[in-house]
Image (cartoon, rainbow, N blue to C red; front, side, top):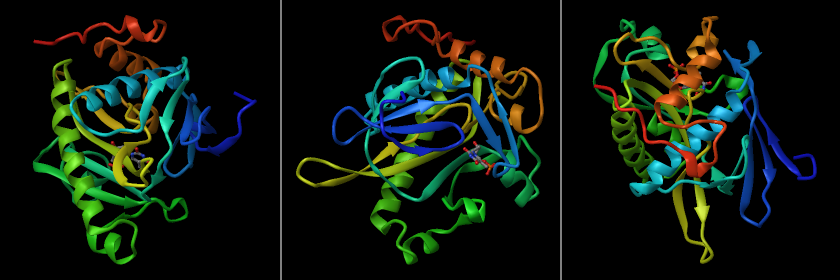
Length: 255
Ligand code: TMP
């Protein structure tokens, strides 16, 4: 990985220039951070698992017609993705009250929301990624009304699909955070595509029977068995980190 030009390093990932123009290599690290870097640590094996889980979910989403940046997994910790111009927003979709919405609006954690709720955060670390309204987004030009519409529609489709997929393996998709980018094709036509990653780092995943946390909240809340929770998500999805892409097993269906 050292021979490639590094473009960006975040807590969970490093981005390198890809082998062809318009491509990027995403390297998944074991490092974890929370509370705007106030808590920093390592979750052994997380990078390998997130690489596989994100590959699996992005591939499934691609199969139902959601455009994504994912091209192919390169090895245990790296995947090749299409280069996009990242829209400076985090899109959060919530099905169940947890985390910041439970605190902000005093809704008991675990309450099923009346409908799926989409929220936006402005990506600005120095401001701790504040929640913003559609008015802010269009007024400040972070995205056009059309792009916003597209992101909302894609996010709700992603939520419907992933909720069903996870429920099939005994996991409740409580909420998740995704990011989108502008992709320009050879004719310079722009489309909005799903970027970044989808993994237990960016989702809240609860066991559907016991509500046991199977995501990064275990790290945030100093719980034990953090790596094991990520491993369990991968296992239930039928992904084994040791095996090649052709060895992906069918998901383990739960009654
Ligand atoms: P929140 O309840 O803290 O607002 O988080 C909502 C979702 O966003 C949850 O699935 C976790 C994810 N998330 C991130 O991916 N990165 C972050 O820095 C934070 C705070 C949350």
